[in-house]
Amino acid sequence: MRTLITAMALLMGVTVSASAEAAPRPRPAPTALNLDILGFNEGEPYRLRGAEAEAVLRDPSVVLFRFQSRDWMQRSTEGSLVPVADVVSRFPARSPAELVSVYRVDLDGDKQHEVLLFAVADELTRRHRYAPTVLRLTDRGYEPHWISDQLPGERHSLVDVRDLNSDGHLEMLLSGEAGHSGYYRFHQLVGRLGAKSVVLPVKHVDSVHYVDLDRDQSFEIVLRKRVGRRGPASQWTYVDRLMRWTGEGFEDADEAFPGYHDLETLPALVSNLIDHYTATAPILEEKVDAIEEVRGRVLTTVSRPKGFGKELVRALGDVQKGRVIVGREALLRLDQQYPYEPQLLLALARVFAREEAWKRVLDLSIRTLTVDPRDREAWWWAAVSFVNLEERSSALASLHLLTLLGPKRADGVAFLQARRGEPGMEGTLQQVIDEAIATFQSK
Image 1 (tube, rainbow, N blue to C red):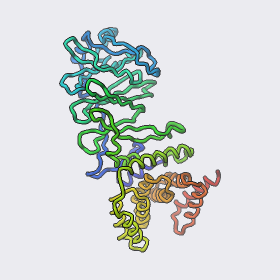
Image 2: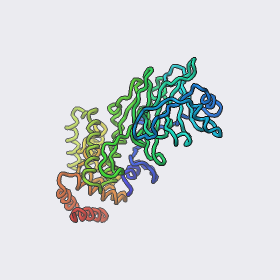
Image 3: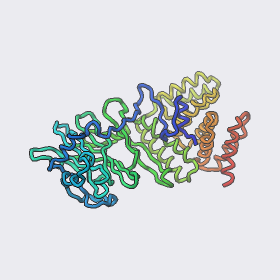
Image 4: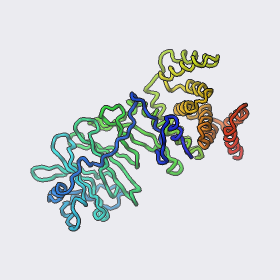
């Protein structure tokens, strides 16, 4: 099924490939939030190669932490430090730098570099589990500085290293893999606080990325958290949460950027409802609950302007009395002031439907659903828009959700039957309504 992301792309006039991710991504205005995702650098700016790496690895004081158990599922941190020279000497035909990756980093911003080591060769990881190990060079040689002994997995790697908050210290994103072809994957964000490390575990694959929402060179961390796991894994519910590294710890950044959820998290959840409209009621309810929870957090950061209600009543009155242009302009101004009023959004949807501006109608319908995912009229206008944008399957999904998410299924069917009888209805829309009604009458 071509899903909501395709329709959102139509709204923006862009092309979406078949491999596009599920979350719709509206194109922000120049002054809006910057939603560009930063590519992870895999530590390349800091990696040592060739003779430089071998010089470190052949030093007799350089060690790696080796876990006692090969079973990564036990989450045991028991193990010991073993000389890297002894580990690599068992494979004389291989260069030490092919067996162990070496990175030179300054994690504390004190101009004293540390080295970060990962056992990467299959010859090593098949027999033992090694933890990412940070060493510091002293007068006595290299000494252990920090060990990532709580990161699950059989194989570990450096995903990214950069200064997240422009304080001169580097933060690391580590990854652990296990299972065939890395089926299980875990992440761990590490920041330094004095002589200690502060660790933020990230449990799920593809669930973390960096953005610079306000373009201030301090990066926000997007964590995609699982909030519902009913049904098969493909139907689980995920919600984005924003965090940032302050130099003292990882803190919630949702309140600082509520607009992120308007552009990303909430449209993605509505898209998820449409994608999985045939799922069981408990699965759909999990997604509705997620929308309501995120929207509730966003609404705590904003309030209606003074006099908003009176101006809205006046604008709605103008539209109802036929002064459509005056009413529409007033509604658009009010929408700029407070973009979370379903009555206003649906009034604008009806106005643009008269003009057959279906991309605008769809946009307003989806925005309404990110405020109230049970709004029957919003699902109706989404279905009408999808039909006119030749997204028949999404239109059918919208009519199903119109019926399923209301308090009574019978009322939803009655709503569709009443709309089915309206004069001048487009033929494809009639067919979609009939198909939706027939589905519920057969149950």
